[in-house]
Length: 114
Image (cartoon, rainbow, N blue to C red; front, side, top):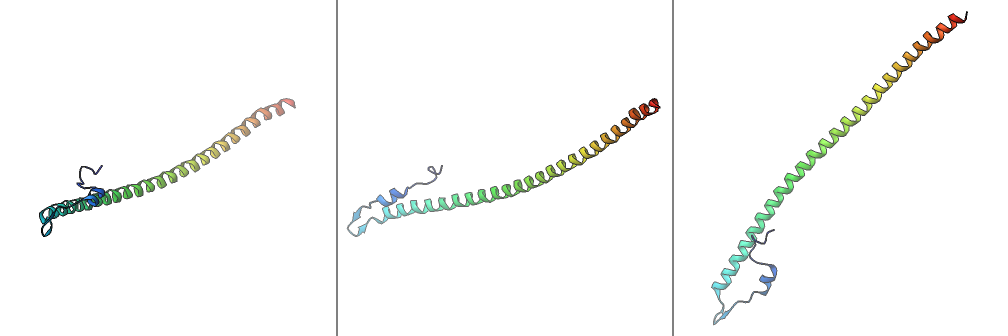
C-alpha cells in the first residue's frame, strides 16, 4: 500500500555500506542517503496524519450509527408497545361484540322458550 511512497526498507538502511575515502566516509554519499531517510520520515508523518484523520472520521461515523441504532431500537419498542395496545383494544372490541351477539342469540332463545 505504501511501497510506492517509501524509498527505503529497514533492511536497506541496516545493510547500507558507505564507500570510505581518505578522510572517512564519502560525505556526498552519506548526505544523499540521509536525504532519502528524511524523505521517508516526512512521508511516514504524512501517512500517520492521513490515518489519524481517517480514524477520526470513522469514529464519528461509528458514533452517529450507534445513535441511529439506539433511536431505531427505541422506535421499534414504541411500535411494539403500540401494536400490543391496539391488539388489546381489538380484543376488547371482539369480546364486547361477542357479548352483544350472545345476548341477541341467547336472549331470543329465552324469549322463545317461554
